[in-house]
Every structure is written in C-alpha cells, then in structure tokens.
Amino acid sequence: MRVGLISDTHGLLRPEARAHLLGCDYVVHAGDIGSPAILEELAALAPLIAVKGNNDTQPWAQALRETELVRIGPVFVYVIHDLKELDIDAAAKVSVVISGHSHKPAAECRDGVIYVNPGSCGPRRFSLPICVGEMTVSDDAISARVVDLSGAVHAVVSSPCRKMAVRR
Image (cartoon, rainbow, N blue to C red; front, side, top):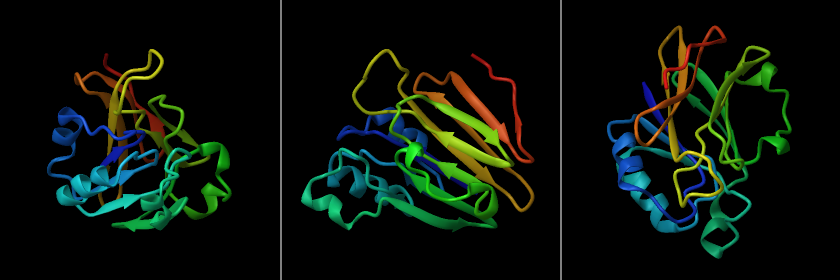
C-alpha cells in the first residue's frame, strides 16, 4: 500500500506535488492546508486523512480534527500538525507519527516508532526545500521517505526502525 504524505500547502497544491500523489492508496495531509479547494483536489486522488494546522482558522476548517488516529492496513498511524503537541505515548499505541508545521523534511525512528514530516510543498518559506513524502505499508514492513519536488531524497526510514542511507 502506498500512502502519500503532504503538509503545509498553505493554499498551494503544486502540480509536481499532485503528480507525486497520483496512484496512492491514501493521502495524508498534516495540516496548514490553507483552502478547502486543496482538500477537494486531494480527495479526488485517493481517500484523504487530514488534520487542522495552526493556520487553518477559517470556518471551513472547523470540521477538521487536530489529530487523527487511523489504521492503514496493519499499521496504526497518528497524524498531528505540530509534533510538539503530541499528547500520546506513541511507542505504546502507534507505528507511525506523521506531522508537519516545521517545514523541515524528516523521517526518523525513535523508540520503535517511525516519525515522518513531509516538509512543506506550499509557498517557499525560509530556505527549506519544497518536499512531499510517502509511506509504503506491507504485512511485515513499513518504510517512509521524503523527497523534494526535484526528486532528491532527503530522508528514508523503515521498520524495524532503521535509518537508510540518503541519496542526494
């Protein structure tokens, strides 16, 4: 199963990001969506799981939750915008935590849990790369990676938790 990971679009769904998400079994948006049109476009690609970000304050965003706990195949995934607000013992409940907010792409393993931040693919902020991510889930393995929209890989991690070599 292939799961597309996206965050911090801030109202802009770049064509390259949309192309990356084509063919996914699910799409997860980790907040700071910016517009209901983004949700509509993503939901047209695959079943959508989305959480509210700190900038999603408009009335359309009131229907979104701040966190989601979902099962994707055999894997429990927790989605939150700001990882600093994580309020669960992730190691006891989930295999993967997906977050956004910092705009910094990352995939790492901590205490047996894979943490993924797909970075930002919306308007460029700071000097950070424009990135998206993906997670693959099979019966006995999970892997996650974050790539910038030019195709360069920024982070890769897999289960059992081990960080993979990163190609730049």
